[in-house]
Image 1 (cartoon, one colour):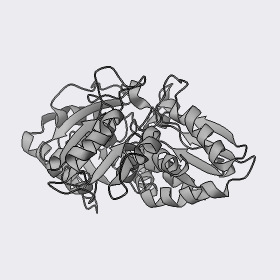
Image 2 (cartoon, one colour):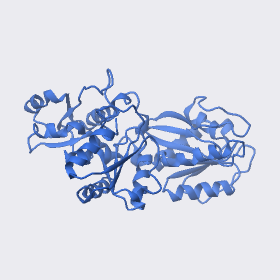
Image 3 (cartoon, helix red, strand yellow):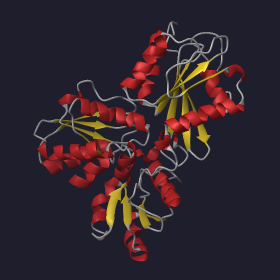
Image 4 (cartoon, one colour):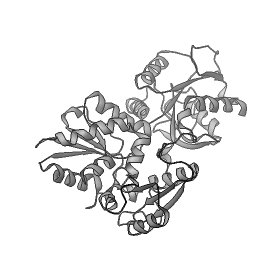
Length: 389
């Protein structure tokens, strides 16, 4: 996929973890981080040991907070790890700050490591709560809007519920009740046609994640969704007279020739961009397309790793379409997966970011912040394609 449209070999309706709110648990070694994640989830997800450095790679556990949202807890390595692999472990823990929507700072005795963690949270504007594990230590009081103390080794359900309530009050905008992809574009009773191509890149027997998410959100809104392939779009419009048509970015030009002008047309990638990223920053970046000059460098920023095909949207089609639209020679570079934007991103005249199906909202916005800090225009795949094709 690149972003929304070309990820079809990897994303199915059963792999929606990256659409969930991610909550990282941070702190020093042996403060009880693994025990806390096991306590909250009610499962032995993370290995618990009295020895330093037991948690090496980040452990992820999906969890459903009833009547709020699905979340993913991240169990990270201790930030004061001094084992042989400590540098790499701590680096991974700190990198995960760009992946999470909020943090839980767990400690026993407050010290330098906790001060540094709080400074990192504030630096990236990351919401956080503080939990003190009072097992074998003395409770302390911090001037914090969200702090609690408990003995994790023998905590009861009531105390776990208190942590869940702190999470809900810290991340209210990520709950089920918040409109995401469609915002105020669609209301109860509206009719929407979703065009989901079943082509050579579609996963066998499944839909890609943004399509599944769109269907579910329309059901939650109370709208009527009709799902078709491009060949059935004309018939679907005649039968339903929809308010909105949503298509894959790759077929936007063909859809424009079919959809009447009075019916709004958009793409899954644009809807995803609005729900996960900064749509105004993308709009500003779109204006840079008409200012490109021969020899400019363009960075294609994917959020997944995948086998490249001749129909690849990011590595093949977008470079081709951009060259045709501008009628100039451009140089292209690629980054993929969870790789951040390059330190010298200002050398690029434009960054083209995928929809971000495979990363969290925080990870995607980390790239957007980096582009803004370096005054580098950035635009979303879908928005760019709608302009130039």
